Amino acid sequence: MNELNLQALLLDESFVNYCKGTNKEDIQKWEKWLQKYPEHKASIAELQETIVAMGHYAGELSVQTNYDRLQSQIKKRANQHRFTEIGMAVWLKIAALLVAVGAISLFLFKQQLAEEQPKNVQHIGAPGKDDALLTLKDGSVVSLADIKNGSVVALQGGVEIQKNKDGELVYKAVEQGEAASTAVNKITTNRGNQYQIILPDGSKAFLNANSTLTYPLKFSENERHVHMTGEIYFEIAKIETGIGVGRRIPFYVETANQKIEVLGTHFNVNAYDDEPYTTTTLLEGVVRVSSKKRNESVLLKPGQRALLNEALRVENVDISQEVAWINGDFVFKGEELVSLLRKVSRWYNVDVACPERLEKLKFDGMVSRSQPLSTIIDMLQTTGKVKLTLNGRRLIVID
Amino acid sequence: MFTLTGRDLKNVWDQFVKEDCEDSFYALYKHYYHYLSYLGTKKKMSVQRIQDSVNDVFLHLWEKKTDNQKIRNHHNYIITVFFQKLFRKETLQLTDLDFVEEIHDPSIHHSVEEQHIRAVTTNTVTQLVEEHMEQLGTKQRLVIYQRFFLDLSYQEIADANQVSIHTIYNTIYKSLEKIKNNLSSEQEIFLKVAIGLLSSFLLIFS
Image (cartoon, rainbow over all chains, first blue to last red):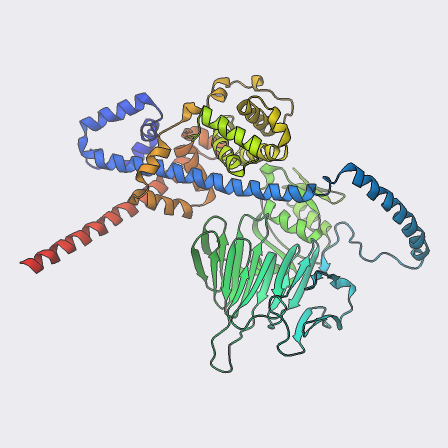
C-alpha cells in the first residue's frame, strides 16, 4: 500500500474514531497499523488534523448561525411583550380612559356612519396596493395614501416633498444650500403595500411590501448613503462632482448585514429577516457587495446575484424571475413552497402555516400581483400537490 | 466534543441565573447546542426540528429568568424541556425516555478536539480548512458537523437527513479530497519557492 486510499479510510468508522480520539480500541488498532507502516505516519497525521479541524469549524459555524437566529427571536419577542409588561394598575386606568373615549367616539362615529363608508380596510385576500408611511425629520408620520396626487406633502429645510401625478413621492430642492445633510426621512411600507419614490438625487427606489428606506433630505457632496430593510429595487442616477469630467459620486445601500457600492445602475436588494439570504440582483451596470461581518466583497455583473448569509457567493440568475414583482407579477420557476408562501404572506398580509414536510415542494407558475389571493390558492391546488384553506388572516397548507 | 464538564457547567449556569450574564448564556447555549443536537439526531428527528427545539429551550430560559432560580438540576431541566419541545409533548418526563445514561453524563463524549485545535491554529491545514468550511453550503457543512463533530455514524446521519448513506459519504469525501488537493498544491508551491531560494543562494556563492 504505497498511496493512502482516502475513500477506504473514510468509510472505515474506526479510522474516524481514531482521528477524533473517541474510542480506545480504535486508537490502539490504528497505532499498531502505523507501527507496521511507518511511511504513512505523516499523511495520517495530516489527515487527522484535517478531520478534526473540519469538525471544529463546522461546529462553530453551526452554533453561530443558530445563536444569531435565537438573538433575533429574543428581540422580536421583547417587542411583542412590551405592551403586556405594563403593570395592572396602569392597565385599569388606560381601560377606564378608553371606555370614556370609546363612548364619545361611538356617539360621533354613529352620526358620520350614514354618510361615509370606511375606506382603508383591506379585505382579507385582496391584493396589496400603493401605500406607505413617511416619517419626516421632526418624527411626524404622514400616511401617503391619504394625500392627493399632485399635492405637496411637506416642505423641510429648503426641500419640497411632493406626491406627483403618478402617485410617486418626489424630493426637490427649492432653496440652495439650506438642507442639513444629517436630517433624515424614512419611508415604510407595511405588509400588503408597495411604494415608489424619487430620492433627492433623482435616483428611483421601488419598495416592496414590509420594507423601509432611510435617506437624508439632501445627500452629501462626496457620497450618497441610504439604509434599507425588506426588498427594494433601485435605479441609481449617475452624478459627478463638478461639471464635465468630475469623479462619480458613489451611492451606498446598507442592510443589516451588507453594504453595496454603486456608481449608477439598476439592481434589486432582498434583505427580509425571514429569508435565508440577503440577495442582491444586478440588472445593469456594476455594483460591489460587501459583507459587514467579514472582510469580504464581490463585484457583480449584470445577470448575476450575490447571496449572503454567513459567506458571500455569486451565481448567474434568471432576472425575469428575480424582479418580476417590479412589473407587478409573481413568477415562480421551481420555487420551494416555503419561499413562495413568504412572498404571498407579505403581499396579501396573511400569516401562513405549512407542515415542514411540504416546505420543499417545488412549483412553477406566473400570476399578476393584482389578482386576489384566491387565484394563487386555486393555482396551487390544481397541481394536486397541496390543499390550502384561508381561515381569517391565516393561510393554512394541508396535504 | 463538549467543551464544558460537570463543575464548569454548574458555575456557568449559576452565573447566568444570578447575574443575568449574556456571556454565560452563550456558553450554555454553545454547550447544549451540540449536546442536544447529538441526542435529537440519535432520536431520528429532523435537523430543522432539533435546531428549532434548541432555540425554543433557550428562548424559554431567557424569558423565564426569575423562575430559573428555582431549578435544582439545570442539566435534567434543560434536557426535559428540550424533549418536550422536540416531541411536542408538554407532560413528557426524562423517565419516559430510554437512554438515561447519556442524559446524565454529557462528558462521556468529551474529546481532545479543543486542545488539539488550539495547538495547531497557526498551521496551514487549519487555515485551509477554515476557508473551505466557510465556502461550503449549509447542507454540506451540516453533514460534516454531524460526522466529524458529533461523531454520529453514516447511517444515523443518512436517517436524520433522509438521504442515502452514499450521498452522505460522497459529500464528506468530496470536501476532504478538495482540502487535501489544495494542501498538496500549497506544499508544492512551498517546495518550489524553497528550491528556488536555495538555487539562487548557490548561484550567488558559487
